[in-house]
Amino acid sequence: MKTSILKRNNVNVQGQGNQTLIFAHGFGADQTVWRHVVCAFESNYRIVLFDYVGAGKSDLTAYSRSRYSRLYGYAEDLLDLCAELNLTQSIFVGHSVSAMIGLLASLIEPERFSRLIFIGASPRYLNDVGYYGGFEQSDLDAIYAAMSANYEAWACGFFASLLMGNPDRPSLAREFANTLVAVRPDIALALARTIFQSDYRAELLRLTVPTLIVQSSNDKAVPPEVGEYMASKIPKSQLVNINAEGHLPHLSAPDEVVRAISAYLVQ
Image 1 (cartoon, rainbow, N blue to C red):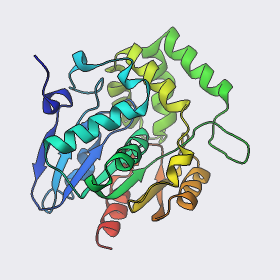
Image 2: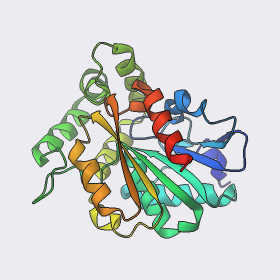
Image 3: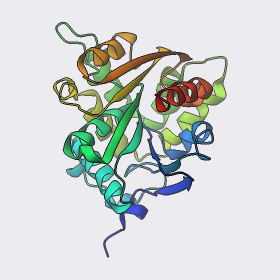
């Protein structure tokens, strides 16, 4: 029997209001990562939370290496979810890789979204001629090798701390490490390669949906230059720099994220 879309992606709907906010998590996380942020909006908005296939409490039997070898597979899942819930003109909040997933989904069916909000987003992680993404290929090859050698040790001992930052608050890195190690290693490695080797810079110019770019002041995965680059390429975009350390500001500085989103929503 075919798994329902709502079960496949462990979809949860809460809050109240005529306008819908869709919150989409990044690599190695699940929908629980949004808990400090959604509480600020659930009294005035309908909130949609979900887990990508392979993350959280999604249906692992739905995972297909071929479907998810490109971000388009995840974008199709997002559009499936929107169709199942009859969502149009919703506001999409995407962290990290979810930003590009939301971008792709909006290029396919722009009527589904009235606004996009990108947090810690990057269209290209690799440095290129005239472009600074923050990583050299040798950096990424080292990440893939460490993941392959001992995924749990890599997640708990290096990657979680690197992305989270805030060394004076080790509980944050531990929380992220817990969701990282919950991902099946082969799925995590395949997704990491898909993310880090991707290049969606050309698609930025095609985006017609108004977009807010939220950039942390100190993000090891996405340097400030990336936020500035996206703002220069996305036609209807705004860039907001927030005082937050790490790649997951919705965990480390949720009040800053709430303020940025709230200010944008009332415009």
